[in-house]
Amino acid sequence: MPPSKPARPHPIGKVLIANRGEIALRIHRACQEMGIRTVAVHSTADAAAMHVRLADESVCIGPPPARDSYLNTAALISAAAITGADAIHPGYGFLSENAGFAEMVEAHGLAFIGPSPAHIRMMGDKIAAKDAMRRLGVPLVPGSPGALASFEEARGVAGDVGYPVLIKAAAGGGGRGMKVARSEDELEEAFRVARTEAKAAFGDDAVYLEKYLDRPRHIELQVLADAHGDVVHFGERDCSLQRRHQKLVEEAGSPALKAAERDALGARVVRALRELGYRNAGTLEFLWQDGQFAFIEMNTRLQVEHPVTEMLCGIDLVKEQVRVAAGERLGYGQEDIRFSGHAIECRITAEDPETFAPSPGRVSTYHAPGGLGVRVDSALYSGYAVPPHYDSLVAKLVVHGATRAEAIARLRRSLAEMVVDGISTTLPLHRAIVEDPEFRAGDYTIHWLERFVARRLAAGQAPKAG
Image (cartoon, rainbow, N blue to C red; front, side, top):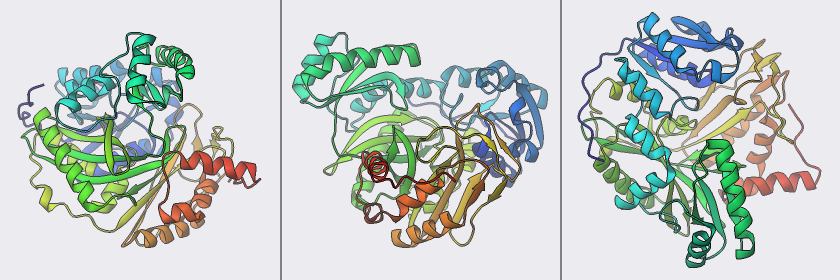
């Protein structure tokens, strides 16, 4: 793909936020500080949401089901037209990585605050993304060069790379269409089930095969590029603390990496994205084991965990997204970015901390912690009714310290202060994690949290809901 041409300057005075919850509020706050007016869209279930209450204007776009509101592209474009918005910010989730929606936004003369539709489409296909990264010299996990045409091909590739192997949906995400085979006896069933799940979840049964790494860390690199060929990275985040492929805790930087490893990976990625002509924010995700990085996917949007990077670097990534979408240059280089201290984020969800069953309902009391180096991104307030229709994330608690030890101490104190009554949340689980000696030592992989939860259940130490 040839590098994109510099974007036509697109003055942005009003942004429609095509999302909800804490990320909609986060975008609103950045726009307000830039002197940009905001338009909140909402379903009928979100009429009393905080982002709706604080935005300059609001438009109801449909009933509670996301397909009838937040995924209703015609309603979103109409809302932008009637309010005179200049741009649309998709946040994360919903339509943030929908190339067709990005094309629709641009076709209506609006700025899409995100990457180009072509790059969204390329990176949304994991096989195409891996092929692009292979050509650009980014390291990959050993595996099939493309989609597997048959089980016989899968067996041949698995024999070449060695067991265990992982069968993954080409259009997948969140662990759906992903199966491990530890031997040839397990491969046929894993191949069949992965294809079935991929077809059901994504309408596409294409799968590929990778070597399964038994003790990797999940490391991701935050990047930002303008349309003039300037690309920088903001360091790595360690997102290894996951349950069923869903991240619960993130750190910046990684307790396992040396600065030289981060800098070498960053330089390689910056060169690749400059050659690709990428623009706006993006995150490249890698597995890291025994000092080796292997690319797994790229997210062409703002990440849920972007605040840990902001705390580390002191740069507002949402403001930078808006500036780039308006056609501005970054105005700084890699040498101007400083990494200071350590940051940790906990994702607080409205779920039972033992069973992880969703727990919507009315919040009777909400108290956010504070103090030096503490940030809470949340749209909660006392009396707010968490609806059952959407993702269960209700708050992100982010702390920063001069050292990792100070950040952990600050996190421990902040988790003890935080109060969310009326619904069950994962706060008790986070409080247990921060006390664990292995977490405190930074000694964990992507498999650690599942085992931690299982050990506590077996020992009768499961955190009580609260």
